[in-house]
Image 1 (cartoon, helix red, strand yellow):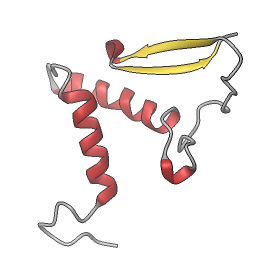
Image 2 (spheres, helix red, strand yellow):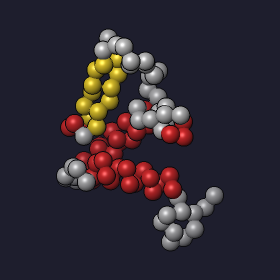
Image 3 (tube, one colour):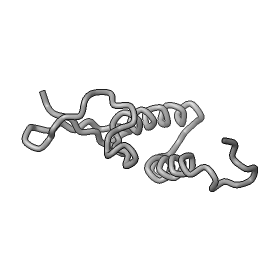
Length: 93
């Protein structure tokens, strides 16, 4: 389906991604160059698709990098991304 011209709010999925990326990344980081922006966005997209829960998928990631673990009773390990702006949690070995 094509989006009508000059209707920026017509594609709600793209608008949501742009809003989230802007509020979580570019409003909190100083982007130094196009290369830096590409690296930051690539890491953010990997986090968003591999770890971040999505409501439309019953709070599961869209492309999980590993199976979901039950974190209720085991030790949890935190991995910091993008200098601490984002955190990923997984079961400690």
